[in-house]
Image (cartoon, rainbow, N blue to C red; front, side, top):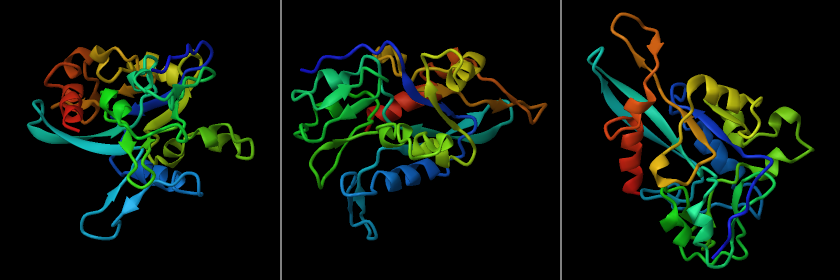
Length: 247
């Protein structure tokens, strides 16, 4: 089994604002396009223009509806899902070949596809459903945080971010170092109270979420949801927990 490395310097990851995400799937489309460009980054598409298409995605967006008891109206929220680059990543420790690994220099979890035998143990171990077996190549695929972009000095500094962040029209996604208290992501987490997805799994995900806000009866201005309310079995993250358990 693979041993987890300790990442002391950087913890690179995504901060996703569920209050700002409009479910446009721009992040999904741009991720698919970027990771299907070039001979070494293909993601399979089978019957892509027919009735029953099958393909591999590194990023997906789910929708969630809940009744607002303040306004008696139904509100729709959107939940983007991809690898969370966990500090205690179970997908890494169960890998029998060492194909799954966590980079010491920045905490990004990757797959060495040359060593991957497609056994699926990592997908079984991931509580977030963040890994997919590519049916053409026969190896596991997952979000790489666009490691080929963020360190590419041929790109302008503003382009050295994951493509999902670059393409988001509402700015719902931010990228940065969660180990740096002065980074944009760290400041937003402190200000808005960023939360872990399914903390009871004890995987210590690097990626964080900012919870959506609901409208009050007397004002169109949104009011913050309590973290305690939204992490229980009936809240948004409770719904996410149940949804992911069915994947």
